[in-house]
Length: 423
Image 1 (tube, rainbow, N blue to C red):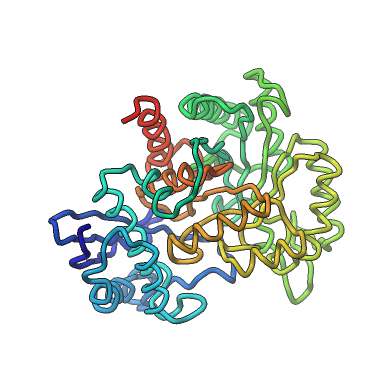
Image 2: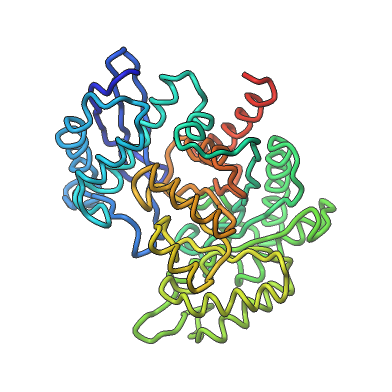
């Protein structure tokens, strides 16, 4: 097997125009590969640390030259001569080089860039698509391939939309498992009609960080109602063909000192917010809530889950900030029975191996697995391959809009063709 010769890194820009890392690996057989890493705006406080320069003379302190330095001067020499297909050993070395629980020495962005580029180069060196390669080297013992159902974030609020919407993401979920290309077609047609309806009823709109509509909605309910109106106009049957979901990102509007949520311009206690969620689920065909309560409140998450499952037996309560793709956090959530779904973001933890281990534990606990992008994205398509490798239940890649979102959907359709043609 070919061995690592060196890894270089450069500062590129993500979809918000902020610096991030692109890593390029060179193997001793002449093969080369590149990979880039995303960044989030709405972050859990327990995520692995992203290294920035904090030099105010460049990019308002958001540069990543120091992270690139860590790759070229510390990581690259340490990984030289590792066999490229030994990803578990490579990731173990990366974790040892950093030596901290939260990747604060070298940075999760530096570490993930290297882990990710090694995974892609390993696939390339074995002439396997990345999704097949990941399944093989991690011995996932999954026979079939199941495409994930996309959670299309068609309206952006919160930190992603910069509007008066408290909730961060408003999902349209097509329930029928059919060809992924057909589901994506449905989403494009839905989104096109949604834009026309918003323009007619509200008059102005823009595009948020994840490609969804940003408009001056009066409140969260109006945003959901316009999704329902669009569904009715197309003729979709609720709870059979279509449902909706929300990423509430509640930690963003939770105030710890007062122990209240600043929701729709008023202070709300936890028990009252739970009542609001129950009402929304009953009225608006919601099948999924992500981060509805703050990331420390495992106990009330459990209470909310029990309440929602009484309303809909297949309801999915999803932890993102709650778990941050971290085994310790996930184990605690399982102990409290706080959720039955998990968001998986490799840059929350740092290596592909740790990401896979978290997915394995989530599946063992019968949690729905949702592979996710970040709000600050690149044209990297790895998460599409990861979703297929592990047979994820869902994928989050944003609206069918903006190039950094579309490439993920295009990759899913490409994988569909690879499997259909047995390429």
